[in-house]
Length: 115
Figure 1 (cartoon, rainbow, N blue to C red):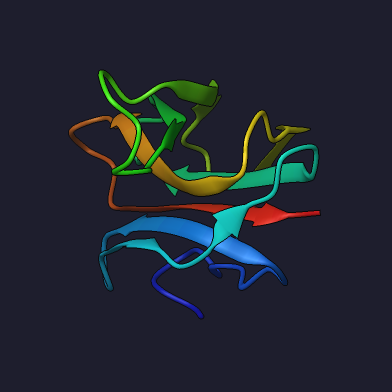
Figure 2 (cartoon, rainbow, N blue to C red):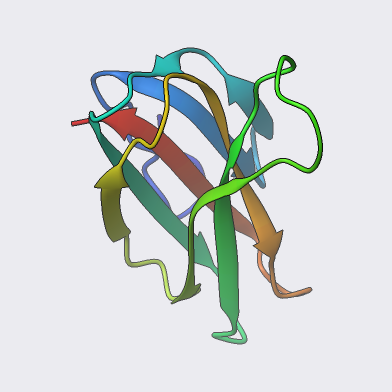
């Protein structure tokens, strides 16, 4: 999938994505399996070259309390893709979302998949 400057990946084993800009999406489309490798791919474009941050959250409706953070990170909005991985601490749905984006950012994506 291509937008203005970014080509949004469609990784095999995708379980969640968040996209802002041309074709906004916020989708949980699968579930993690405890012990599997989770791979987050994030990028954004900001003419002001600010920074953005993302979080991977427990998206299960069965769990109580605050959504637990599984993975998080900060990255430059320079159009370059950042790749981060971790091990899934439990089985179930996860959500990936932007927690901070510069006001001048024009597009970005965050995908979460199993490796």
